Length: 360
Image (cartoon, rainbow, N blue to C red):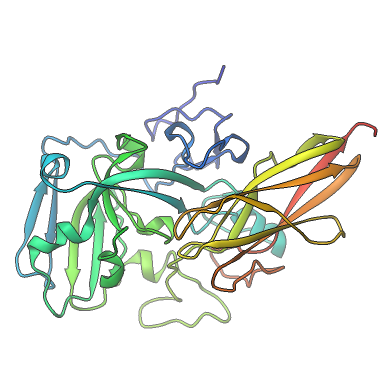
């Protein structure tokens, strides 16, 4: 039986068998060994929040669309999204840009501030809601409209601009349901944005306002945080570095860290994710052995992770299982990641420690 635990700052239980505690009191990662299917169940979908989950009454909630890039301000109520507008469903993966920050620090021999994620700030759900472009249309976008910025109703009013083309994409939606259920409080009730293939910070939870602007918008979430800062990353205007859009190409193994296995035939399973791209290949390597292809068992698509499996006849002893993914744009996971000050977008080949017990 799973132990029922919860943080005072979030709503759903956080049993350690399902969710990995980062120590922040707000952020809990999906246990990779308990992912199971393509879609992550709500009880183990990772939680990333800057502040405690707000309590929002859907009977008084509104979503306001305004700004100098629209012809008129439009306000929606919850019932409008539920019953008066066309609903669509998309399966999409969401990943925090800080995923694998601890591994990044170990690679560089240093530590980073921020949420201490291992491999667990990534999950996939079926999201149901209204296309953002359908909500924007009655506001009459002007020819000069350039950026669209969703804003949260949490205590810090989290917000992050999108270019207009991304806001109008088929799979950018304002979600009101998750895996067929009303959106849970920790995941953005009553409504959240889902931005396909982009970092999790773009998929703003607890929506209350959307600004459409004719000029670039600068907020802490695209000038100071969720940007790449350091040598090789040029500052631009008020931004300390380039704003992150896609998370890094990455892979993970569905085993504990470190893993403990018995000697003999093993079927190793895992995931790989390529943001707006599509995972094309996954390769595995045991120790200093050759790279061997893994089988893609669900190839995913743009914005969705792929699942893979690899057969290994394991010998007793300590091993390192290395995994690297490639995508349909010709990118492959490198041996190392260029450093940046906030520990974002770790993309290095995964090196997963494995202890194999027992005799042949």
